[in-house]
Image (cartoon, rainbow, N blue to C red; front, top):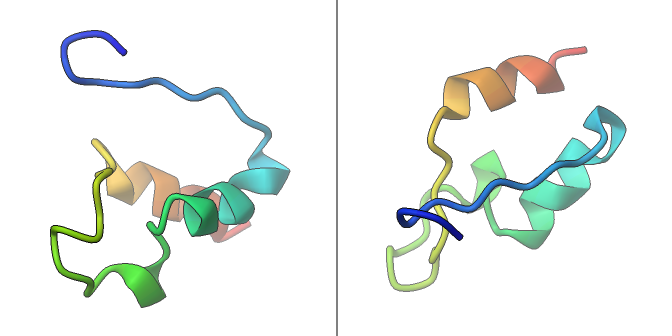
Length: 52
């Protein structure tokens, strides 16, 4: 972790599993901030990868 940011390298094929494990799927987006300890810096770029 550097400057409050963590960079994770992963395969695009495993993106949905990673988001699920980090509680960052759209279904989990409405959770309280206390539950979600991680946030995506550029969620629009991540969501674009899921459309393939």
